[in-house]
Length: 202
Image 1 (cartoon, rainbow, N blue to C red):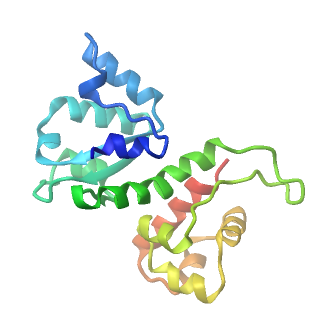
Image 2 (cartoon, one colour):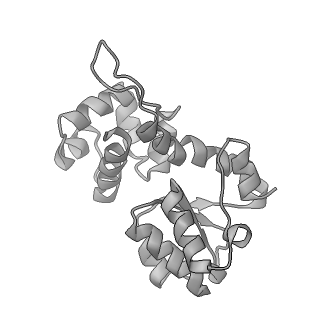
């Protein structure tokens, strides 16, 4: 089963460059990037060596498309342009045996954010807030965003997505987040702030 066909089971339409190319390769790639919600980058030696993949990935980053790195070959060397491009992004280990599970995590985590930012119906009359489509599981969401150390503290303090939204609205500082949830890793604090920004901004 391919990545594209598994994504299709969730209603996600995947464009693949080998199938969607026309006479003008660069134009086809640019059109695909500009019209997509996110770009999957397959971390492999072949991707690193491909000049077209480099152009496509760089163009996607410049146009601020959501980039989701998928590790398909553990031997890939990331001490190069690709390593810089995916630095700080959560990477998914994609393998044939776990493809269905991995795609389910991506759809429920990463892609759910795209839904949250586009599927915002009428504001809730009681709170004045736009309705959000939120991930199903807070702990899993934290893990996928690279800030899993927050999970224990949030459970102790009975934090849910509504509490996180209020914290975001009140512009909680990095120090606030670190002290409140007993997290000492600045990388994880920054990751949580970035994740909250992406999920709750209008």
